[in-house]
Structure formats: C-alpha cells, structure tokens
Length: 410
Image (tube, rainbow, N blue to C red; front, side, top):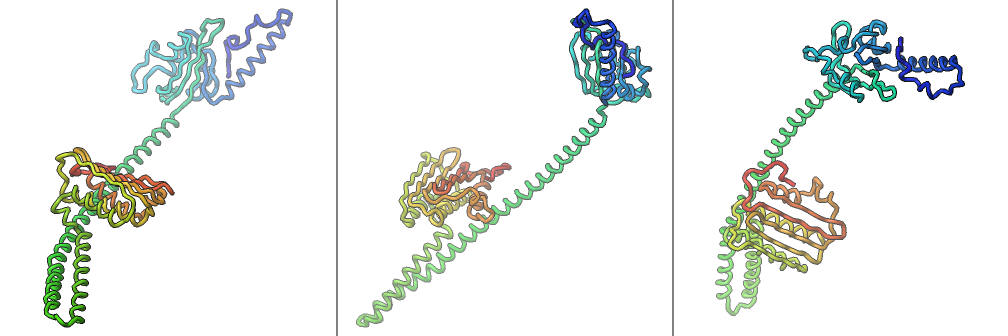
C-alpha cells in the first residue's frame, strides 16, 4: 500500500500497552505494524481500498489502483463512488444512495456483491466482485475496507460453459429424439412382424386342419373299410389295425401342431378360457406340484385380437421357461383381471438366476415378452435370486393402449 492515513484503526488499542513502556517503543510498534500491513496489502492480487464516512478514499493498494487505471496517489481523497461506481452496466446513473457499499458500512454490516460493474479511468467498465467491511473502533464506524476483483474472465468462462452445456443439451435432445423415433419405428415393425406371424400361424393351422386333417380322416376310413373286408386274413387285418393306430397318432400330432400354431379356443371361446386351458394343460403335462387360481371380475369382457394374442403368448412363454429352465418342483400360477388391468403371476421354487441373465442381449424369450407387453402399454417384472426361484409378473392395461408412452417398455 502506498499510503495508510488511518492505520491506528487497525492497530492494537494503546490503552493495552503498559504505561512504563517508553513512547519511543510505542511508536516503533506502530511503525512495525504499519509496515507489515502495507506489505500484506501490496502482496495481494485483489484490489483493496479504504473509505471514510464521506466515501473518500483513505488508502488503496497498487493492485486495486492498477485495475482502475490509476496511480495510488491519484485516488486518495476522491469519492470512490463518483470515481468508479457511478453508472449501472446498462448506462444509467447509479445514485450513491442506492450503493450497497455505503448502505452496508454506514449500518455497520458487511456486504458482498458480484452482479455489478466498476469503471476504469478510460471509461470502460469491468465486471467486478466486491466486498465491503466496516471499520469499527470501540463500536463506532469510521469507514469501510472494500476488496474487489475483476471477474470478467470468470464470467466469460461461465458464459462459455453455459453455451457448451446448452449446445450439449440440444445435441443430446436431438439424439434422444432420433433414438426415440428409431425405437418407436423398430417397435412398430416388431409389432407388425408379430401380427404377420400370428396371421401366418392361423393360416397354416387352418390349412393343416382342412387339408391334412381331412386326408388323415379319409385315410383312416379307407383302412377301416379294408380291414372289414379282410375277414379270415388275420395277418392283413393285424396290419390294417396297426396302420389305423399310426393314423390316430398322426391325427393327434396334427391336432397338437395346430394348437401350438394357433389354439382354436382363443378364437372361439376368448382369452379367459384360453388362459385357463393353457394353465390346465401345463399342469397336466409338466407333472409339477402346481397351485393356480383365476380371479376374473364378474361380467368382464375379455380383450380380443392382437391384445388377447399378446397376453396368451406371454403366458405361454412364462410357463415354457419354467418347464425348460427352472428345475422347480412347485409352481404358483395366479391370473386376475379387473376393470383397469390384467395381471398374470408365475412363481416357481427353482434354481433362479442372476438379474443379468434376464437383461442379456441373447435372452430373446424375455425380450420378446417385454416387447409384446410394451406394445400395448404393459410391463413385465422379473424377480429372481440364485437358489430362491423366480417370480414373473405381467401387467397389461385392459384392452391395451393405442398410443404407447415413452418409457413403457421395461
């Protein structure tokens, strides 16, 4: 600091110095403190100045004077508000009565401002962050010490950072919209393929039933006719009897294939009867200890068309996974339907699996179930732990949803 007109305000109270200490020693102490305080203020990169109660500069360090474009001696005794704080950033006059520095130190309280500008000698402004602290002596305010720093670079960096963040947000938003659109198209394609597949299954099942079924029935009738006319020829009758048995097996296999392709009960008796039939068929064929229940609200009409097919196929896949992978000896099956949704729960006590097994990119069965459910606004939840079995819960909104919201696929 080049000048410290009022250092006594920052020095120890003289009354605390013993009376026997010579006055020369006291002056020496004042000089030491003044030198140290001057060195401290001159070593800082921040601007520091003091003002009295009239707002006149009592001291300023070289860093502060340099930021303002002055020599320290040119600032002393001048009104600091009129010199460096006279105008708002937009060019309007800044009355001293509105200045936070003067309001704060006259009230004996500190303040900190980082949203205003200070003005240089050449008339150019710079963004500044400044703090004002009152100078008190025995409880009386004698002025204030103001520290300030040029934050132009900081604000520029913050602006660049905001611009980069906004640009990144826009790019992420654009990419997210593109991905969402591509995902929506992909799911629409998947749903279209599922519809085409079901239609093809229905067509094949109908042709097998009509063509191959009719041929087998006709063949069985011809073998029976031939067997009746071979009385007395036991060897040939035995052969015809065996052929009739093979035809019966073929008819049974054809019926099973037709059912696997497209169970006729789904088209003729609806979803509720189909789910009940599938559960009973699983119980009969799996030879597992099964407990199952079905709770359908009275008078509730079953969904039809693609929605009904999706629920049936997901239920079919849930039971198939238990039979193929669970290694369980007990299965709980619960089906419920009310006005708002359909819920299907399949719980086994098998070996279980880690969550990663169900999220794997090769878990096609799980992905297929999730996609089928998601297309109609439903969701599939899987809870499984090693050695503690697996619970699969399907929830579908009753009658599905025409427009699937984003995030519905889980």
